[in-house]
Amino acid sequence: MWCLISLNSVIIEIQVDPKAIGQECLMKVCEGLGISNEADYFGLKYTGHKGEELWLNLRNPIDRQVGNVSPLRFALKVKFWVPPNLILQETTRHQFYLAARKDLLEKKLQPADWESTAHIIALLSQAETGDYDAFKPPHHFYLQCSEICPEKQDVKPENFLQKILLKHKELHGMKQSAAEYWLLKEISAIDSFGEELFMGKPPSNLSLGVGPHGISVYQKDCEKQSIPYTAIQTAQSQKRVFKLEYLNQENEASYLEIKLESSPAASGLYRAITEKHAFYSCETVRSAVTAQFIRDLKGTIISIFNEDSSLGKKYVFDIRRTCREVYDNARRAIYQAQNEQQSSASSSGTSSRRMSTEDAEDLYLEEGGECCSQLKEAQSCDHCRDNKCDETRERLVTFIDALTCHICMDQPIDSAFLPCAHALACVSCAKRCEVCPLCRGEINQVQKIFLPLHHEQDFDKHISSTPVVN
Image 1 (cartoon, one colour):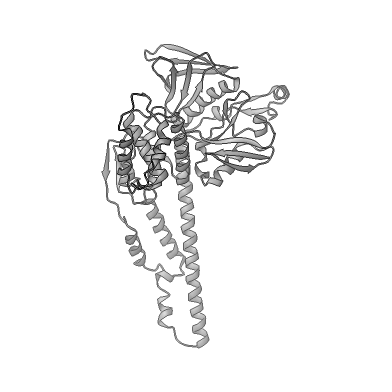
Image 2 (cartoon, rainbow, N blue to C red):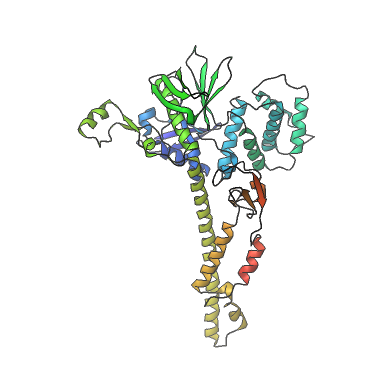
């Protein structure tokens, strides 16, 4: 079965088994993009019978959700938005950037004021066109970004284009990847960052936004109302109607009811609240969430006689990990891959060195001469055959990796977050963190620290001076 995946104006083809579940299709797409370790941030969307956009449930068979008429059409979307400092892979961060740029141009994300808007357009220009060139100014790109406007649309400043130009000049020398990072950092401060919007059925002017911190209620000519996840008492969907019971600011019970275009849209709203709450707020996804399922009519009848039957069984949620678990699992996978790569390179180098020593010994025996000075030098630590010596070197390499910044994986660790006292980042990365990446605690101060073996040349010097272990 062929699936056509829309990816930022590009269509890619994926072939899966006719009975495949959604997770298989998503993993093939992500592996092709090189983001398999952080695939949990993404999802596949398809168009329902009434034109609404719905998330494909990754734990259920694809044909039960969208039919089996090939080719099937999906769109790869960011499902769970996280700050850029929690994204470990450059390819993942680039897909986040492309999705953010699209949302900005479609006015799904709106900056707070014109100053922020100018800065965002300048970062977009730096990422797309590079450094400002006075002979070829990217005015066409500035005009393309003119659709981006602040949430409170005041009168646009007369010198707005000049302000964008000056901010673009200030970014001279910034790499494309750095511009993408700081753009994501800028939009992560927007209130609607990471929100999934659900529109009420006309003539209702009510809409709900489900984001990392809770639910935002939007109504025409009314101020936005925020409902944190901790205030929600009950939530349920009945056909096209979604009902919510929560505690208001006076700690009194309040009720909210919204009618959507279709029953799948109402179920999607209920699913979004549960999954986003689990992803952003919980330590782990509870089994009560992952095990929840429904059956179709045929499966319900069969289950009367056999409760363990899987016939007609459809899972309600497909979330498997929380934000913290995704970050930790990706960090471990990347760290393990780097260790395996280093071990492979080390073993191949050792093998070649051993081969050269054996050749020298053979040559020595054939000629019947005495041990030459070159063969004696081959017995030094660099050419040692002892397994204990190899283990010592591997331990030192592991030690150096442990002292490397866990965010950029490039610079040595030289800062600690206070008051939690966790040391896992370099100064440049630590300054960009709003909370501790390890414990999510508040950061009051970033303290400079000094650890041993800060530089690679120190490590090489230490390696060269390591004695042979007999």
